[in-house]
Length: 197
Image (cartoon, rainbow, N blue to C red; front, side, top):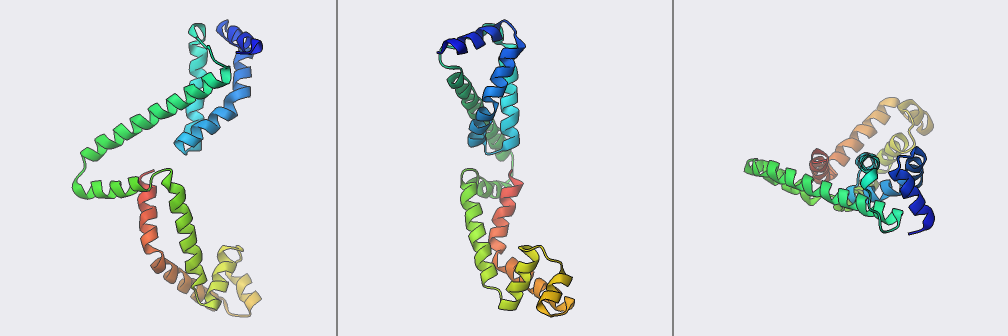
C-alpha cells in the first residue's frame, strides 16, 4: 500500500471529512462501473455504491485495509453485488415455488432471457425488426421510415411524397399490421422480459 493511501485511511479513521470526500471523488465512478457490470442496472449500482461508501464511514474506526484502497473498495463492491444477486435469486425461487404451473412456466421463460442474455435478445430483436421493415412494400416502407426514423409528421410526409395524408395513414396502418404479425413471437418474449425486470 502506498504511503499516501495509508495517510488517507488514517485520516478516515480519525473522522476527517476531507479523507471521506477524497475516497468518494476518487473512486465513486469506478465502483459504479464495477457494480453495473455485475447488476446490469445503473440505478441499482449507484445505490449499492452509495450504501458501501456510507458504510465505510460508519465503520471507519475499525477499518483493516491491508491491500491498496482501490483493491479493497472494488472487492467490497464485488462482494456486495454477489450478495445482492444471491438474495435476489433466493427471493425469486421462493416466489417461484409458491406459484402454479402456468405461472412457473412464464417466469422460467423470462429467466432464460435474463442478463447477460438480455443483450443477445436485444440484438436478435433489432435484427428481426430491421428485416421486417425491409420486407415491407416499397411505398409503405418509405412512409414508415420517414415517420419513425426521421420523425416527420404525416402532413410533412404527404407533402414530400406528393400523396394525401389519408394515404400516409393507410401506409402506416399497413406497416404496423405487417410488423406486428411478423414480430409477434419476439414481442411475446420481450413482454416476458419486461414483466420480469
